[in-house]
Structure formats: structure tokens, C-alpha cells
Image (cartoon, rainbow over all chains, first blue to last red; front, top):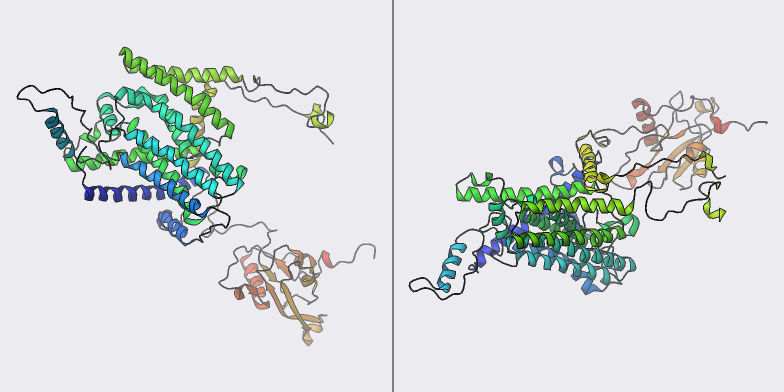
Length: 418
Length: 189
């Protein structure tokens, strides 16, 4: 492990958390603006030029609102739930590379050194010193279980949901929390399974190494577009973005697990979704879109500091772009019904992710070119479409049973006629 | 009365082929539509900058109409106050001045107060008024800094009349001096 510098790390933590929270604030503004534009409205434009100071006003409002803690709730867990939700979401940022990184060195083989050559311990020390001399835009650089850590914390987010729903001592909240946790747990599986192919090809769970692999071989977008699609869909479900925002479906479900929350506690709950989205967008760009790589443009600048800033900007632009794309998706796809949501996860995404994984294993085992994976992905995609078309029939002639009315009955009164 | 089946026109849904059932092309198509809306012209009214054009039957702030001579048209009959379901109209009647009495006016409102905060803008005062003295205008931005400011007295209600007739947004709906339908005798009498 590289040497740990508490001051440097503290500054990085403050910078990263502050930056991400700021991005989240402005994502809410972006969400409102984009929603407005897509509905032919203008959106918030009162606070500051073009409404740019709206997030500050919203934040202040959250602090000034009345804190309501209902009498019937379990106070400890009620207050703990938002903290758990935000805490787990923010902790996942620890291993996310948000700028230029240097891949961590490979492990040193433990063999007896030839006479006159450095021992494995010396080689390890030299490699680590060399690695530590680079500036890495990660809070915990060189962590080989990086992505696993993010998935682990992502699954801990369920605790926030369950605690919130249960401590509210209210049927709607409890049902909402069960619904949301079922959704989060279900989508954990395709989330992890879709990117397993990436790890098998790279041979590491370390995000820094995954970026380094893509530098020399090309983005994973080219080799595993289907995995990208599955991963993106799962992250939307994980962060409760539309079309999977059942916790938010006030119109049809009386709200979700955060029904009983008010003011800043609700704000934290909603912030969690955005932090999840930011983390997921970072991971998407790191795993599939080459991280800070942009067709070699980022290495045109030779100055190391300027180059690092440029790479930081490239990666953050990708992240913001993906977040904005999620907001475009919001107004494109209608919200899923709960059974459709479960069907999508268990009957479509998990089998597809599994088949993709098997294909990756075959390609890796038999040493076929990675282009084969692109073909397999396209094949799987069209195959799934074909199967869905065959299984459901056409809209005018569906394969599910349809009750045909006997002729002669007046339309619309079948109940009365029987 | 149910609809006969012969009158029902069945609309065939579009057939979904493989391309549509892949969903992603269809989703991209939807994305194109929404993105198109993103750059299209905005159609919402920008309220504080752009005055909304209310329909003529919009029920906003009240006004007290003036007659041809510029006097308050109200005859202090209490019909509006009686009809008001929110009890927000308060009238104090007094005998009309001598020169008004020559025109056949016996009473006039010494004070005429409407609590605009209590009012539910149902328009029943307008219906009840036999001389069309009280009317609801299309003024919709009614604000005040205190409860007292929202209690409109006779002068203020008359000033609403002056303002709205001058602005041309709310012409007087009845002929000055002529009684409206509400005051006509029932047919057959």
C-alpha cells in the first residue's frame, strides 16, 4: 500500500465530498431545468441569473423548515435512517477515481532472488515508492477490491431504506420500504453480474487498472455494449431514478419509505439518490468509457499539472454527461409497474448478464479476439428482442389469454350481461 | 343507455415488429421526441413579466360599479351580503343624499367592506345584485402585506372599477342605469 498522508487525505476528502454535494445540488437544478425544457416550460429562473443560485436557496429552505418528528415513530432508527443512507452513499466515493490515476503495480512474485538481484521485499518497496510518487485522484488509491467495495456499500444502502420504512411505524412507509428494498436487492444482481466480464478481461477489480487497460486496448463500450446497457439500467434502479422511481410514485402509491420524513431529513434521503447517481456515473465512465481517456486528446498537454487538470475535467465531464443523460431518460420512459420491474430484472437482465459472462469466459479461455465479444453482445441483444417478440406475440394478436366478448353484446356492459 | 356494438369503432393498434420489440430503438425514438421538446419554443406564460389574459368570466377581485353620474351604483339592499356564503360583505346603509333621492335613489351604502381573505370568489354576490353594482373583475394578482390591507372598503372597490374600466380589461357588463336580468319580474306577472 502507498504511504498514508492524513493531511493530504483530509484535504482530498473535503474537496471530494464538497464537490460531489455541490454537483448534487446543481443536478437538482439541472433536473428541474431539463424537466421544464422538455415540457416546454422555462423552469426556475428567479434566484440569481437564470436561476443559478436556486440550489443555495433550496438548501437554506431545507434548514429553515420545521423539523417534524412524528410521535409514533421509533426515534432512534427514524433519525438514524437518513444518516445511514447518506453515509453509505458518500463512503462509496472513497475508491472512485475522479481524475487522472496511475495503475497500481502488480504483485511481486515471491521467488528466491538470484544473487545480486533485489529481493521481493526490496522490489515491492521500490514499486510502492514509485507508485506513491504519482498524484492519484482517488481517496484510497491502489485498493485492489475497489469495485467490490462500491458494490458492498451499494447493498448497504438497503439498510437506510429498511430502517426508514420500519421506524416510521406506518403501513405505507413499511410497504414502500419493502418495495424499494426488493428493487434494490434485485438490481444488485445484474449490476454486479454485468460488469464481471470487465473484471475477467482486465484481471483486476481495481478501477485504476481498469482505466489503464482501456488506455491500451480501447474502451469497454466497444467490446461490451450490452454490459454497459445492463449496468446503466441497474444503476438507475439502484439510485431510484426514473423509470424505476417507485419510492417517489406519490400519485399511485402514497409515497415510499420516506413518507414520514420532513425538511432536512427528507433532503438527505433525496440527496442520497443523487450521490448514488454521481457514483454510478463515475463508475460507468471508469468501467466502460475509458475513464479520463478521450481519444488521446488528454495527453496532448505535456505539462503534468495541466495534464492532470485536463484529465480531471474529461472524467468529470463524462460523469456530468451521464447524469444529464439520466435526466433525459426520465422524460422518455414511463415508470414501470412493480411486476414489470421485477420481470425486467429477473427474466431479462440477469439471464442476459449471465450469458454475457459466459461469452466473456469462453473468449478469455480460448483466446479469441475481443471483437468477438462485440458480436456476441449484439447477438444477445437481438436474440432477446426476438425472444420477447416471439413470446408475447404481436399487440393485435397477443399470446396471453384475451377474453373475447360474445357477439351481439352491447359494448362496455359485459358485467351486467353475465 | 349503453352504446350498441355497431356504433363502436375499433381502432387497430400498430403492429410491433422485431425492431420495436427490441425496445432500445423505440426508446431512442422517444428520446428524440423529448429532446425535440427541449429545444422547441416555450409555451408557458411568464407570469410576473407577462400579464396573463384571463377569460372574461374569470372571478377575481370585486369592484363596485359607478353609475352614469359617477356615483356608486349600489342601493344598499343587502342582497349580496345575504347571498354571500362566506359572510365577507359588510354594508352599512344610509339614506341617500337629497339630490340622489330626486333620481329615485332612497338608500346608498355609507360603508361597503369586503374581506377579500374570507371571500371564496363564488360570484354569488354578483348574481344577487339587482342593479349590477357589484361585479367580479379579471384581476387575479391580489396580494397584501397584512390582513388589514386585504379588507377592501368602498373607496378601494370604486378605485378597482376606475382602474379596470380604464385599462379596458373589464368593461361594465350591463347598460348603465338599466336593470339587469336579476331584477326583472318573473314572467307572467
